[in-house]
Amino acid sequence: MTAKAPLNNKRPFRLLAGISQLGDLADGNVAYGDFGMGNVYYVNGGSDGPTASGAAGDKEHPFQTIKEALAVCTSGNDDYIIVLNYGSNGRGAEDWPILVTKDQVHIIGARATPASKWATVKPDEADSAFEVTGVRCEFANLEIGGYSTGSGIELTGNNWGTWIHDCWFGYTGDTAGTNGIFADTGIDAAYTLVENCIFGESLTGDGIKIVTNCTRSIIKNNLFHRIAGIAVNLAGNVVGVQVLGNRFDMAAQTAGDAITLGATASACHVADNHANYGKTTDTTKYWVSAGSGVAFGYNMVNGVLLQPS
Image (cartoon, rainbow, N blue to C red; front, side, top):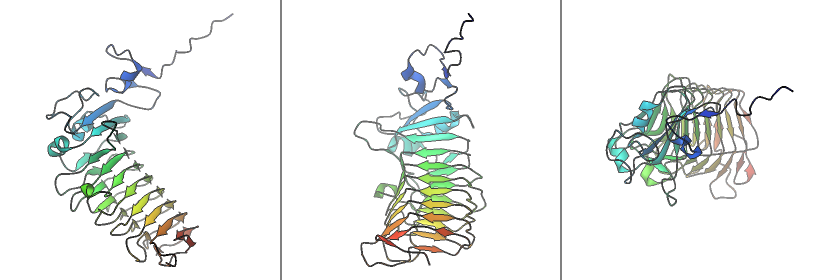
């Protein structure tokens, strides 16, 4: 009888330099294979983190700034940056905005201690928190803010497939800024996915502002809490964009303040969104569209179906 090949003839990872425990797989020293992950690097810019650059970037010796971690990432390798904390040690040494220029980089916030909620990435100067030109980058579980004139995450390059989820923008005074997410002019930001985020009243501009080509993108299951400007402002070339299942707590009775689609919008789908101003008889057209072929499904205002103007 022919012997069977061993079950472990194709290992999902390989261990390097004497690493012998599964728990060490996320310490920046391991080359991942079939998991689809590259290396993992840690950042702690909090008071309990390093006060100078030059750390190893593993969990026991994290980098001081996100810039340090980005510098050792390999573009297109699906490297992960785990942000444990981000206080004055990191903010004061960081270069703002943080330039995410490499492809397939994942920047993920984690609890620094059992009592902490999230990592707060906030510039200490008048600038955006992140400017992204890399392709298929991910941002998750971060409280992100700009300062004064900045945005939380600004897409500034032809960066297809940006995934932003489970983040907080302008929800506390610590993260005030102009826009939560901003896709600038002259770029191609197709296949952008924004989901499960919170956009709050500390923003002085819009929640999500798209003024460029952002086709085949999805904005879903987000909460917009008393945004000063327009919660979802799709003023650019938005074709085939889906705006689904979002919730809006309105700051005022102004038409288009929840969702506005400009004249260059087409073939978009807007459904299952709910706006609330606190008046059971409110009939304000919180969704406004000047585009063509935009399909509006079941969108509610204070529990009542209301079609756009």
